[in-house]
Length: 153
Picture (cartoon, one colour):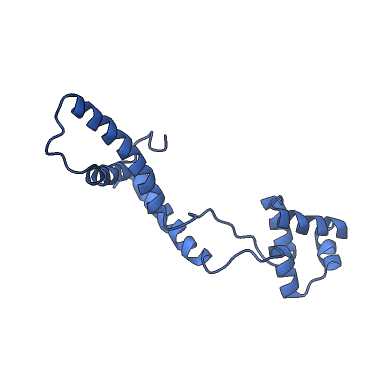
């Protein structure tokens, strides 16, 4: 196994592990700042004092988080001021990393096989071919293992 493939496997494993953990929680209705603040019993004035900002600035950050416009840096500062830490991840919407890779490999394999079958049909060489889906699955597996440079094109 190549070094890049080993690194990819380690990254896949990490993402899949985080994906399983992330399925147990969802963003609270009021956002994480307000929820953590409530959990530890810290008032907005106390948080503002720790951050060295105005109360309005804290309220703005809470609103920005709810609107999805807060920066990771700002969210990290808020967490630190409350004695917490920011944790974030990019995970698959559904399933595991391998499923994303295989879906892309299948797209690529379908294009290759459709093009090949079209050429074979022109030359009247289609008799005895396996089904297109069987061929797609076989080729997709090879493509996913190899991951050529143009994989995501």
